[in-house]
Length: 115
Image 1 (cartoon, rainbow, N blue to C red):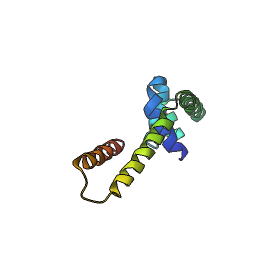
Image 2 (image 1 turned 60 degrees about the horizontal axis):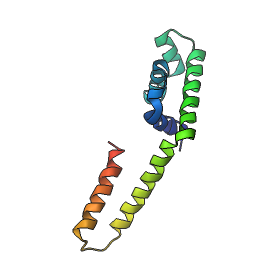
Image 3 (image 1 turned 180 degrees about the vertical axis):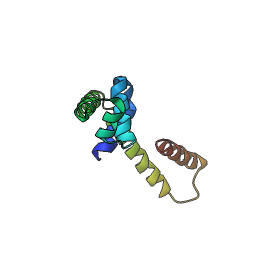
Image 4 (image 1 turned 90 degrees about the horizontal axis):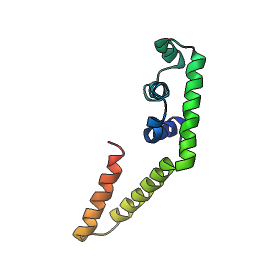
């Protein structure tokens, strides 16, 4: 998984544990694709200050993930649900209504992450 995706996922789980400034800089840099210079200009600080704040925030997010593992757990669960959905798709018709409903529930859960 690329760095931006991982930071974004960790931010989704742990972002509220960052300072307001760290949250804003992470949102602007990773979520809105602002450059260090644009953030620095908007906040009246140096590019180095923005860089340092982002690095501190990334380290905090990684530390929370290392300790709690919520992103890893979610990714494993999503992978297992996708595999279960694929296996259910391979079942031959006619299927009992319970199997059809189970397939629908799994798909609903998988679609929640996209919405």
